[in-house]
Length: 135
View 1 (cartoon, rainbow, N blue to C red):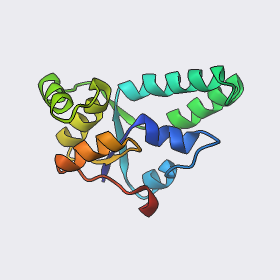
View 2 (view 1 turned 90 degrees about the vertical axis):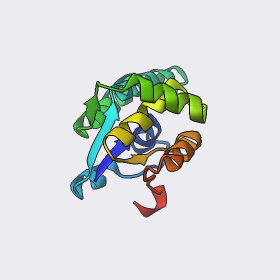
View 3 (view 1 turned 120 degrees about the vertical axis):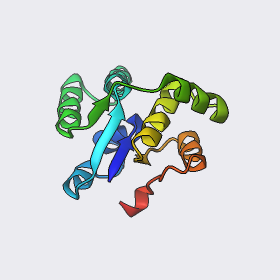
View 4 (view 1 turned 90 degrees about the horizontal axis):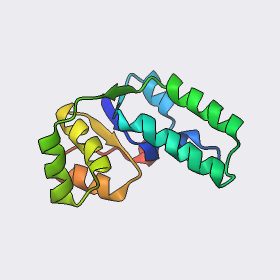
C-alpha cells in the first residue's frame, strides 16, 4: 500500500522521547512511503527546534536525519496547486497540511499522521487514515 507520511508521523518515530508507528516495519511489510518535498524541510526544522530547546544534541539530530534518510521516503515535487488550494479552503488547513492531503488523493494512498485536522479532512475526502494503534 502507498502511504503518505507527514512530519508528525516521522517525528514520532524518530525522536527519542516520542512514541510512534514503526515506519521500518511498514516498509518491510511492503508499504511504499511517500511524502511531499516539504517533509525534507519540516524534519530539519523540527530538529533545529529540538536542538534549540535542548531536547536533543546536534549529534543526535545528525543520527535522526540519517535514520530518516534511510527510510527511503519518496518525495513528490509535483503538487496540483488548484486542488491544494481547494482542500486548504474547504477544510481550513494550512497549505502545508493540504499538500499532504493533495498527494494522498492524487496517489490513491493512505495517510499516516498525528494531525487531527488533517486526518479529519482526509476522512472527508475518503482517504484511508491509518490507525496508529493497529500498526
